[in-house]
Length: 486
Image (cartoon, rainbow, N blue to C red; front, side):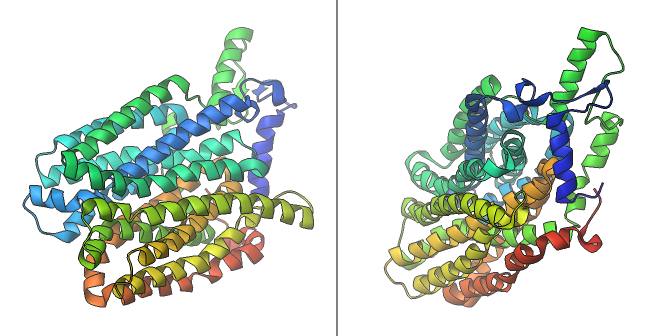
């Protein structure tokens, strides 16, 4: 199927309206149908979104909680390899790269709820394994597996929101969700920076296991299935039992067996990256996202060598990224709603995915400003607050890019929200895992000033991208060259 916005919107709306032509086709029966997640009560919707957001907070928190304890971990295992130290943190993101390839298609077969619960259970297990690791190799392996399981809420969260919230109200819900994704990486170094010196680095993983265990219990009790395909299949089975009509079939049923659908769907996220639109936006978001983890993995060295910070104080340096992330979420969320409404009213008709991109254009200018600010102020050893203020701008730019691109892709490919999010996540986390490994050697060769300037120049090269898609995105999506069948 060719996924233009118009076609996906038609598919989506047909689910909520119902099929009237064939009495054997089962569909949602409007706003009074209890099976329809779009028409659940506000309390039920809010509960699901809050829990998914909390899971999404825990997972990125786990990705960075050991970053401020890297030197302690290396000392414990008698290693002085700083690149390997960075890899202890970023290997978690490598798990994020591989997890969505399987998690996204499984969710489209069996639903989001069961995947949340299974992955969260295994996330607890692998964090316990990290806490008990007896070698650096086993710690890295268990971190990788924890990352695979931790990728679940990051992969499926935007899809859950798309299931529950209509497009015109989605920015606010997406903003709340992104707060979890944004705050987690910033809180992790602070928690780990003080916890590790006090009770040992292993407790950073014990804390993650305990917190995730509590969240697992909450998820089992209160997270409900939202994916329309799975809900319609369940509704169809119920109606077959009630009516005795074996000919009933779901409006979204493809006629393929589960193994055929899985084999087809597992390649969909990778195939989506063949779309120039999805690839270019995902690549841009990936580059900016990797800058965030470059900061996390080098703060202990940068602020330790330049300002004499201990591990706890180096963890506090991440507050700049946390503050910037929150400011970015608030500004982007509010601006996205107002801009979307203004452009919709101005141009007539319904909202378009391109109306989500103006905050990304602003973020494209803010990111290099933050990189130049952070790099040269740290190089000159100005007061420590000055480079931290620079990281505020880096985070604002990152959030504006990530949030706007996520909303754009979900709006443009709504039916395959989980797959398009997985495609973007794969590329984003692959760069997030690998680029920070070059951080120590880059700073050693170029210094903090020119090292961060290099990253800033790369960001500047991407500034035209959101502008082009804002102006010509709809035309490009309707052009055969930019349209990939999946």
